[in-house]
Image 1 (tube, rainbow, N blue to C red):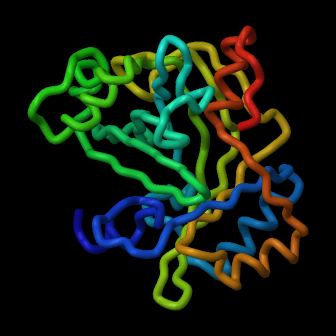
Image 2 (spheres, rainbow, N blue to C red; image 1 turned 90 degrees about the vertical axis):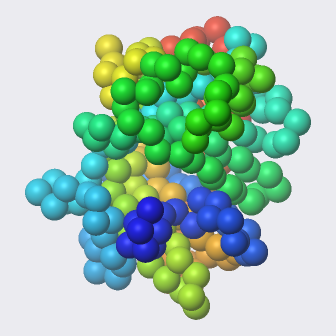
Length: 246
């Protein structure tokens, strides 16, 4: 990863030299203010360079969510906090990302490795081996994790810097859930809406919310919520699951 790519990573990614904890704050907003907030962010922050300039800087995110047969991830039954394993693809890229997200006592950390999309089926259907994704395969084998659902949504993202600390804002709309295709993230069958009347706005930063983002919160009277796209989406496909408080 070159310096420009590193600069556009979320502050929640573990780069190996982080001493200040990363955190995230989420909001569910309605479509009637989403465009106004997006315009506010456009004027003050740097748009994600990976977005499509012909589509207001948006891009599609595909996520294959993994869980155990007992849904240990969904019910937060891991001993080391709220941990999620997933495989992510952006648009129709020929690269996938095997990713681990951990959250404990409000601190967020992510690790991931990039792989050719041709390895997706092997990644999700074999045991650990001595490759760059060995840690991910080992976690899948140890925790008996497999694909349980597929999430897709359209994202806009912005970057900023406050006192030398990077921060990132994302706006996710049209959040859909479907049965997973373990061979190709992004290929899905019939989809159902996860938040029919809502969009998810996320702020990711180091230590404390930057003053500029506090201004946004105050200006639009945004109320933080605890929400997980996975824990909202899975019960849509598996109605027998007890509703989880995100």
